[in-house]
Amino acid sequence: MADQKKPVVVLGVSGGIAAYKACEIVSRLKKAGTEVHVIMTENAVKLAAPLTFQTLSGNPVVVDTFAPPVAFEVEHIALAQKADVFVIAPATANILAKMAHGIADDMLSTTVLATKAPVLVAPAMNTAMWEHPATQANVKLLKDRGVHMIGPAGGLLACGDSGIGRMSEPEEITEEILHLLNSDDSMRGLRVLVTAGPTREAIDPVRFITNRSSGKMGYAIAETAAARGAEVTLVSGPVSIPAPAHCRVISVETTEDLYQAMMRECRNQDIIIQSAAPADYRPMERAEQKIKKEKGQPLHLTLVENEDIAAAVGQNKRKGQILVGFAAETENLLDNASGKLHRKNLDMIVANDVTRPGAGFDVDTNIVTLITENHQESFPMMTKKEVSEIILNKAMELYQAGR
View (tube, helix red, strand yellow):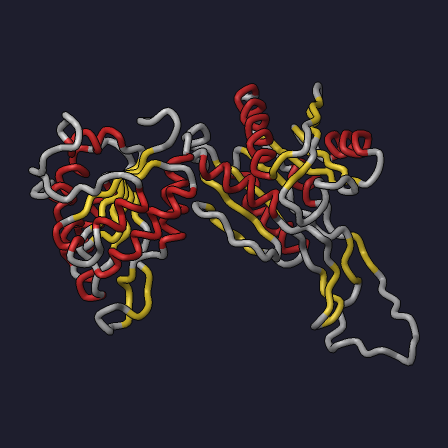
């Protein structure tokens, strides 16, 4: 990267009413540990003060192409070369048209034309302008050239109209910027399927059997794989956390739903990581109406075993495919996990003792042991993000060895 200590984001602010929202983007990027340089168009200056951006970024704000440089360097070239990611938010119809047709008549359009960094634009304009054939043609041209785009969103616009044209929220834009900064492309071209979360088995219309899985581990794995450039399919049970960006999400409710989704998807994947916690049993019968209490009498449920999804996927394993499973145990951790490795035709199993503090359900940390046919390695407590990194590193090692 351009700076050995901090990644560099060059943020272009063009003359849309959403220019004031770009201040929050700068603030969020600084909190995330990036260096930010801001370029404003002359129209943007009429809507938001350069001093605000200078204060938030800690760097001079550039507006005039011909202003005396702060350092002895051609400023638009210097900023273009510094950028690890180049962002324009808001991006008006005007700047999109300039970018599409190579027009460089101000500091922002000149600098973005000179950069080789990934470019992200966040369009913001009136609905009619966004939908105009000229704008849509420019957007298509930019996307075809590899320019990344986020939004616009729908809703009430500053002009009073309601429709598509609002700039995406600063939080979403910042998340996309950080994704581009963190993407290392080491898994580009690979198809990765991750399962996450619990399943629910209905007892009656208002009650169900489930477990304590939060989905955090699987979501961390999916997010990390996407950041490495993989084409990620996330099959998720009911959870209360937002889906990671850049993942195709398939939502499931029951273990049978999960089984059907896996049977449809598994053959087309290169790496499958099954971190979901499907219910092992379901009620033999589901009551059509809410079950009422009967004067203190116990309720008897007959449970039947669900399909063993990991074993079914293992039976359908194709040559070169890597299968990773999870073993959440409360006793005999290594013996139980090793048994699952062989019974379910897995290449690796991630074992964790959920009774240990920091390794249980609905926490942000985990303590795992990775077990393969010929090796096992235990790791200390770390964040689930860090655990996702070591799981994917090992899965990639196995994938490369099997090619």
